[in-house]
Image (cartoon, rainbow, N blue to C red):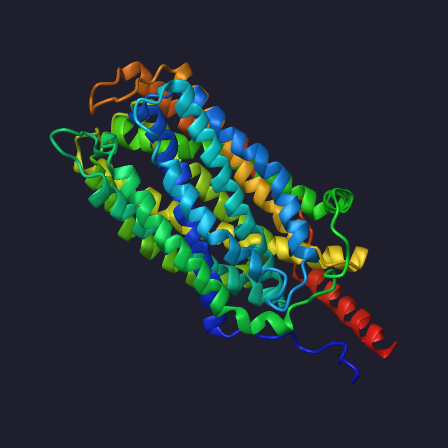
Length: 487
């Protein structure tokens, strides 16, 4: 066997390969739009299930995530086939995800609170389980394919761009065409027929997107690392992997930080549509135009993310982007709550302009933060390999996925309970909610919940895996690989 060069340049990915990898994010974003933006509103406002029961049912799916994320991650780390470790999982998840997603938004009529609660719990669990089978191996695949510190930022920026484009386009279509304002339904989100239409359209696209990702990245299979394929899968091994990851200082810091920020994001996602319709009193069509604006913000974020992480390093980029993402919406809500005299009223054209402007900046920072933190977790997989001698991208992204999805679930649960605490009514027509309830809604979604995210942002400063440290890790791994070949 020929000797490997100890410091050979990492394999560079083709543009079409990175784009194909990013297409897989379409499936996650469509599922995420349904679960975070529509699902709680649908069951609480349209079906009439209480916010607490709706949040509890969704929280149950997070318990399943807590178990399956590390299991699927560890399984994909050890899986062995001629199609690689990750690709079979991504392909196998597509049809179950599509079917369960359609059924989630199609509960039988006259089911009652108990029946609706069970239906929501069962199919949200199945959706989350199907997503785990695809999402954790997909993220781990990205870490395997891109071995260079800077190219990882580019790859995950592609992933973020395509995902953000999906979110922006879906946002526009939902509010302009799926849920338009009518004489019968104002706001249009109260139309029960729109939810199955959204679910069916999403299911078809999800299936196609995952198949395309598998096909478009298949050429990289021979070049992927396969160091753990022969190790045995067991609950003990999976638990050991997770314990080992949490012993990594940088992993632990990122996990706790994203844990706190995830709670903030989950509550905000629950309250966002309520704020738009009742706090700011926008029509669904007005809110829908945010989609095209978001698209330009995401494109700009895609272009600047690699440059930002290269110029300022990943930690400073993450702190900056996350801080803006968290606090800009809270400032605008706070100005309304304080009844600042110069701040425009809801019937002014300026309020929509200000809302779009602040949301534009926030959305531009969202993919920057997301791509950066995914790239940082990939770097941790290298650090873990140096210390342990084992490649554990699956374990890394299983824990990352759990932090993201489970904490969004905790936030959803908290948000559902808080809707009941402030006594927000179901089937609430525009202008029918009392001023006191609307004020409480804004206070919780704005200043109150932002304090939790502030703690998470502070933890980012303790992360110390920077560019120079990663370069040293890569050098030592290359030398180890060279000695192994020589032996």
